[in-house]
Length: 196
Image (cartoon, rainbow, N blue to C red; front, side, top):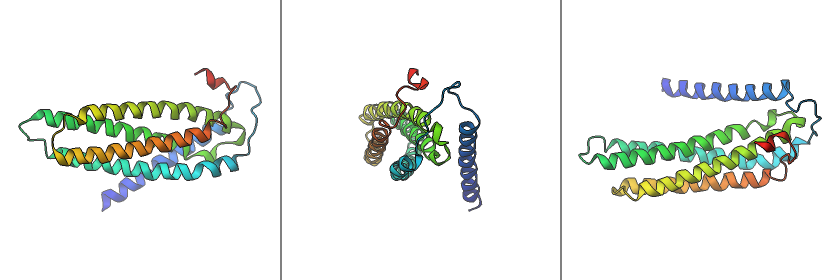
């Protein structure tokens, strides 16, 4: 009970630090080198994106729980004489974890929109478009590797858990793509970050 409370406090502190550092970074410095950035009314943007960001968090939470369930099943193979099954399960677990971490990182970046100054919103969203595009591509690679390693896993319970997890990852990618589609018309097409 005590470690769960400490874990919750730790995550709260981490989220607050990320939000504070993002807020400070966006308010103290203007990296456009003297160019005036057009201020946008952020309320409609935030209103449009908030439901998707909330759904992304819930979907990530389900993926994280699926990863923990998968790791629990992995423990049953630690002393199995066929160590190849354990190796395939562990590799699959790494790709599930990678997809979960990338999804959570995107949620962290999007969940602080309320703290971004209006004149910096387009630049911030442009960077998020680039980050979302990269994350989607990397998570799709994770899905391909899960398909490859999944073919070698023979235990039925692990295969079922892997299939459920792959479905969760697919849902997360769908949500990320939906957010990306909403951000594309808002991003700053002529900003210095388009060179990245």
